[in-house]
Length: 234
Image (cartoon, rainbow, N blue to C red; front, side):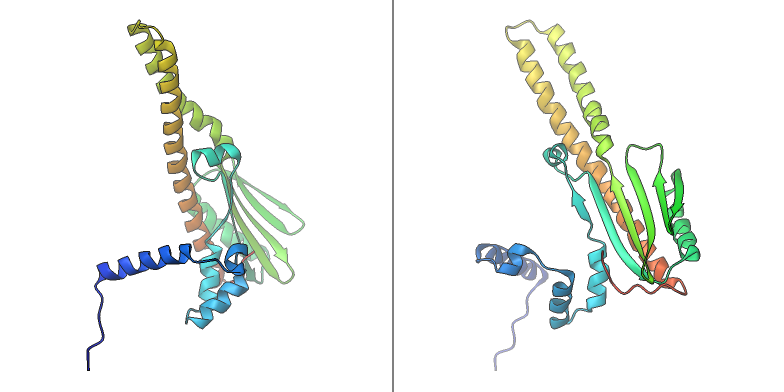
């Protein structure tokens, strides 16, 4: 009897890449075109032996993204929102989670409380971060949001200044016909590419930081006496 074939790590990676390529070439089902709900994903996960609650935890670390026209041109979103719910709530829960949040973010902010809702919002930064905890029936709904739309102008300015200075210097040194036009186009192209690199790099850092914060808040909520995270995603 022929022994079952075994694949190396390299062969496995190649097979996975090929499978993804074939999947993209195949006609998409209605669910693939329209997207999947969390319940649908958890049902599929259960069929293949993945804990549906664990999948819910993972889904909460996948934020809703928002991109304006300029942010799309620069290649990264300008806002993210993570939402999840925990069982129970109250002042003690808000205080514990706010302590965790302030310990991780290490930045200035202000706290607002109204109608049972507690909100922390950063101050003095171009990247706005907020954490909101609000009652939802007998549970507490938590939202972590990052918005860096106001940082677009700063990134564009930081990218444009060195290229403008270089174009002005070269323009003064060169005297061939049309040099001003060529240098202006080159400066604008260079500034755009620099802004794109800056925007994407700073976006990755902010998203990673807020994703870690969301994960830590969920873990802290599960350790609270009244808090049991059931994998619910807002």
